[in-house]
Amino acid sequence: MAKAAAKTVQAGAAAERRPALAGQEVLASGVKVTVLPPANRVSLRAPEEAVGSLSRALGVTLPQKPKTSAGKTSAGKAGRTVLWLGPDEWFVIDEKGGDALADCGKAKGLHSAVDVSHRNVAFAVSGPAAETAIEAGCPQDLALAAFAVGACSRTVLGKAEILLHRVGEQEFRVECWRSFSDYVFGLLAEGARDAAA
Image (tube, rainbow, N blue to C red; front, side, top):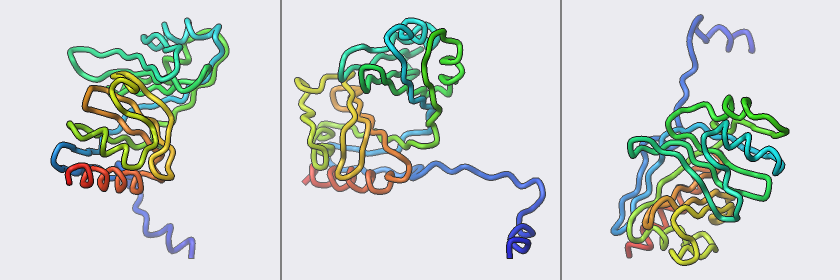
């Protein structure tokens, strides 16, 4: 049977990568949920003595305080963002296709950098009712006073772990594992519809 399956593959045929949920969106009164384009992502762990070298290599000063992020943009376009996840843990997102993993390799000092680009899917939740849509499944207080622009955290949405980043007063980035993307998108869509009701 394996031989028969092997014969159906054409010589020289290349696999085509299709992003999960690409092109899907939800529009409701006061909130929009969209699937963001693929980005390069790195899970980064490092001791305090390597932070300076990694910051220089990445071109972004690694944030040192809980719930904070740091970023670099050019010409008003999204670029590289680093989210603080723990005292020695960061999540690097490069939306312009830069190779953050290779840049980490230029740093001196002990660190662990793992490319997790294909593991995650991201959603933008925006509009005046964005907080309400997310809070429908997330226990975190998202009021601007408690979760300011630039704030980030690892939290849950329903039963799925997510990374949540407030990128604007009325805009959030929600990162989740690809295997949970249908579930997370469904919860965000339901929250958006409820917020609009």
